[in-house]
Image (cartoon, rainbow, N blue to C red; front, side):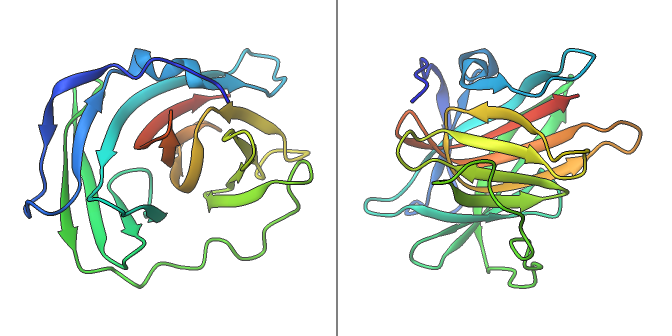
Length: 199
């Protein structure tokens, strides 16, 4: 597994209920080392971390899925069936002031995991699909591989040192790249990370 320091800001943002998850901001530069570009484009692709939070869950709970119409806000589902909304404000070119609150599960999300192509190699588990991006998780290494099915040849675009269980994404209106939000285990701790992918 790719290892990196997990330095976090001091202030945690609590949900409305004291029994629910909380967020702790992670500085983007402390997460960037978990992402490694794989695609061989003419112009060197870039991955920029624009938002990252550790998600502190109640005891014995785990995140099982993520749903979103884009990359933020996102709805996470816990293994007990409860849902929480994570959102943040766009401030000074980045996302700040993240907050998490319990909500009734929306239930109207489309089945974004239907009609998925084969993984780039055997032994990978489907972790998420959104806007033509597919996330494949290696359960042995904890590394997740992102594939772009909207590009010729369905290239692998980057690896993330994160055991992803769900993703949201939105492509740019005037560029082939986009923002991608991933939720899963980062250094063994639940986290949400949003990256900007520049092909």
